[in-house]
Image (cartoon, rainbow, N blue to C red; front, side, top):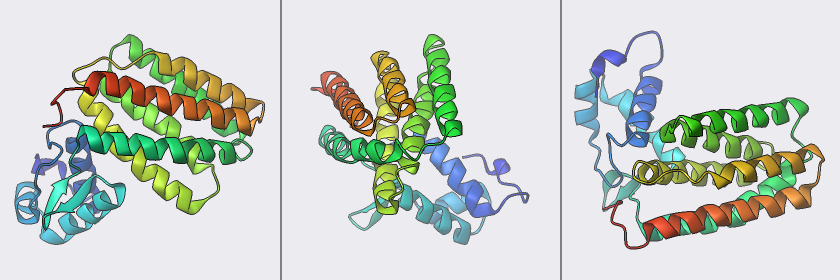
Length: 223
């Protein structure tokens, strides 16, 4: 960790949160790794108070959990990722159904920009930023569902799935088929067809999980 990144211009806990979040997503801090508040505070040159608040935010994201009484980065396993995608298949399609009539024309334009950005990043083989853009695509739809509890669950699942995909796509290429599926979801939203958007989102999440299963199989990338 680079303590020089922490400055006085932004609240310390926000900076610590962003640094830790970035290091978790980029693999510098690995799934299952233990975090120690005092060590983080010392390395970043701050007191333990902002570290504690940053960890609280990361817990809310689902990136940090308590395991055996210790602070631990969300411990990925094939079983855990499977459970994540089962939950996403149950939650996200209905979120898309609800969001279809709520998304504004500006929101739809933003979905299109995200789709185009992902296409460009795919051509550059930039897996890390592709995953960021794709997570933002799903987040934007979920945020328009109009159901606070549904949104809270969806956001947590998406953040944890983001972590899993980052780990996997450092080894395996991001499947390009999802781009066409995103385009079809946008088209269903444009014509305000909630049932079609719901169906397409369910198929999309199922296809993502099928791809992950094919590549995880007997893999030990999460160990």
